[in-house]
Figure 1 (tube, rainbow, N blue to C red):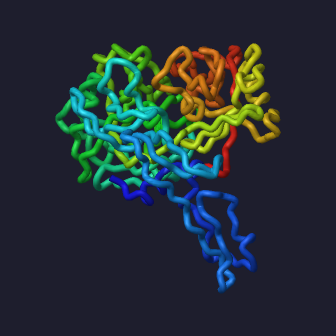
Figure 2: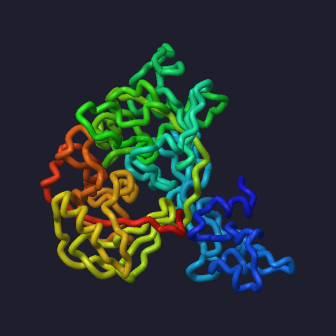
Figure 3: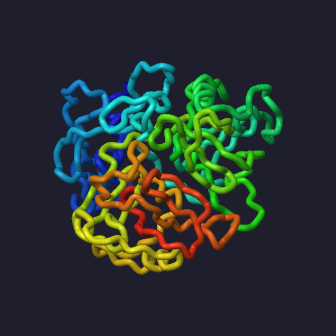
Length: 421
């Protein structure tokens, strides 16, 4: 279990703000010069040495209910304590099979990969969205132990797919290289590698994080950083996420086309395992009626609350479609909720708001009301053919590469929230 203060510091600073203090090296002449504008941090002061000094964080009393997946936390908006659901908090759940990756999701304990519907899919990403090009800048590669640490997401990856080993991942381990979905879940759960035994099959969001869309050309080399992950097959890899409706199909990602689609669970695909202590996320979305806009505490993004053509808090009106070029122009020139600097989201960003526990539409209906269960453009081009781009289908959250830029799809714009990065 986490100590209370340590646990609070792991949560999204957007909700708590209680662990970020003004640095003591800042010169000051009065208390007002030290204020960071946040309630939960406590009040900063200017000390006798003329340096800013952190205040005492507001620590809420312990949660009195019996739900492991909620915490009583300081909330900046209400400037008081709030009982919040905490996604990705470790919990304990006995299932058959009994995997070790039990996490909180939407107020309950789940074990991804153990149910016959979508209810035990991971609730979303819990990291800032990596870039699609220069991922190497965020990787620490340990060739001697076959490990890649992603400093952006906090995840660690086995450098080679299952069944492969060696510095160039070309040696066979003598075990299966492709396997069914259930076999993939078990293989990662039972993996002992680099002195660690808490490996798991990645969610579709985690697996997408190491996909990259770089050097657009006709060669169609694997869509992955080959310095970090050499000899990656140009093929499909399993994720732990069930695909709608979830009984017989699960998500895979193609590392040649970039597709995220569903396949029968007895199909044989490649496998790459991941691990890492996840960042905890409390009350992920904040809907602000003005606009509306939606702040995502998990990814540090601000979303246009409605699709192009819709307005008001409930997103009334008829969504307006556009081709890819017009969608790019619309977002680049958008002024929404008094804000500029909008852009068309990358594929990774757009897939981050897919709700893996819903479909038709596959998105949170409270924070993104009246979203059409149809395709939305991303800014990501299809790297094999520059006349094509990669939208996200919000009926089921899937992506495929067979979409000419002249097609008409829906548009939702995004921008980075500097306070959440």
